[in-house]
Length: 218
Image (cartoon, rainbow, N blue to C red; front, side):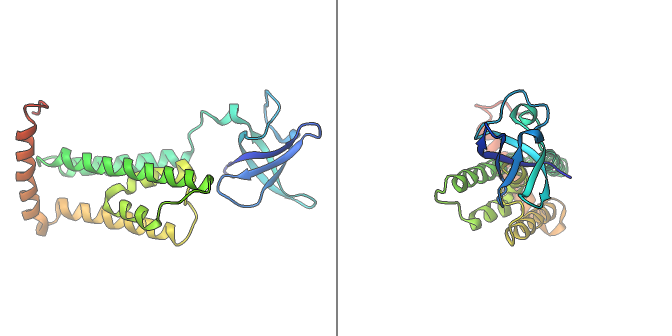
């Protein structure tokens, strides 16, 4: 079972127990000092922890195998690594399929920029949710993903543990990612898109000539 992430929101050091608030929402989880693994210091309110849960007859959900900040601060969630690999594969595929065109670096740079912007929007929205401040509209997040920023959203969701389970948001997100990937693929290999590729290549060549005095391009 995958370790959950949460924050210690209540702690009685004299009695050695407290409660954890899961990062992805839900009921608080009871935790006893004996559940902490390889602890080097006493727990304190605000500590970020990782843990497993089991249901206790008397106290409801109970945390087990709890890792404190020092044990988990350097670990990168597996979901983030998988998302980064998937994003890299997509962008690498775009670069390879467009390798014979002048617009290739411009296209990849635009997709990377959109991904970074989308990731930042997810981060801002997560921060706003935690601080109960005005949120980013879900339509905005979906439009950014549809425009080409979905690799950034793919990384941001597990990175910030934000909007990973909510429906219908998750279903719409995957729909936007598939639509954008299909559109990019059609643009790069579809015969019907050949005239537009040629036009964009001419435009990219003109930009390349304009940028030549400032940035040495091969």
